[in-house]
Length: 497
Image 1: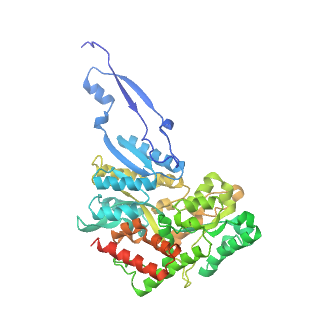
Image 2: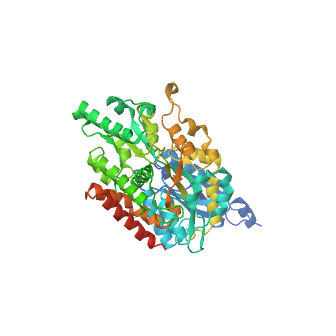
Image 3: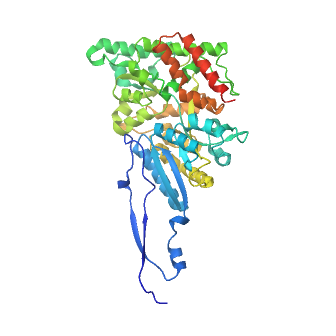
């Protein structure tokens, strides 16, 4: 058969997808992606062309929304994983990255409109998405994935995804936990030394009153030594706003220190029981006293989650509680001397009764929406399992310098987490070994949101941040603020019955 004319088919293969979201965060642009353009002679027979190329229409498609990291290394590691999956599975994969606040809104809007992605990972999924939308029957059950991965898991992290589906009338797994965060205390060793106090982590007192007085004394000594230089340096960078999730961590840690709880193990409100009511009042008084005595910056009432980080890096605060390792991780990438020699990470203090602290843990979790773009939940699950493969996921987590702790025992066994980074001249890492010790050796518990879907709304409203505003701004007594907060919690819970 004679070919009467020549025809060419032009195809273009591009990378895993562009990053989207605010440009204030690191990103890999389209301009950095490698591109390949191919022209291929059309064959005499359709079978020849079919053997040469697989049309885009025949490829499976997958849409992934992923939380943009704080560091370009984190996003680059995920893009690499996405590209590997695309090639290995011959999938038309579209992955986009968005900062957490915007991504949360995007996910909620998509689930409400029933037009979600195939896979979504947001740092707020565990708190504000999974309890509510699993209850409404809008998430794919992931028990099969959890069971397959269970030998690898730290099982104490798993309850975060074990929630109730009110449509299916059962409790099951509706997400895949992958990494965790908890409370750490970061401080400037050089500022403590300048204040005439011992800067070695082992020399800082860990009894409740002594611990907080130590940071107050650091502020007092610095301002007395050089009022012009240190007049606006504060001893404690405590987030107390009604908009930051850090406020929730701070309050929950203090509440545990005072021996209180809001929900029972069965998910019932117990905050109004005398013991818990008293503990809530004491916790609110603790934060009010720090604020009213002038040991925290006055604008802490308006802080977002990143503002304690910014104040720490500018050295306007001596110490700050922070529920991830984002502060030292930033130092490692930008100023290694500050990371290894001028700052350190220590633990939360013993409680007022002398008990060792119990650490609240939030476990970041991936979801598979039911009403997804391509309606292929199995492919979405395959992608998640591909991401968390041991070596692959270790590189992803290490890309953020340990900002998150892996939910998998085999990944956490990497020497990186026990030893951390190596400094010049053999200087030991003053951050990551402490973080790992908290996860592996200290009492921990996950946040209560998995117990009751009402917790999604309680966290979204930041009930404890609003209670702090009552004591800090409106000058209510802690007892009055406690009554209002408990009343609001009970009202929210009643709406979910």
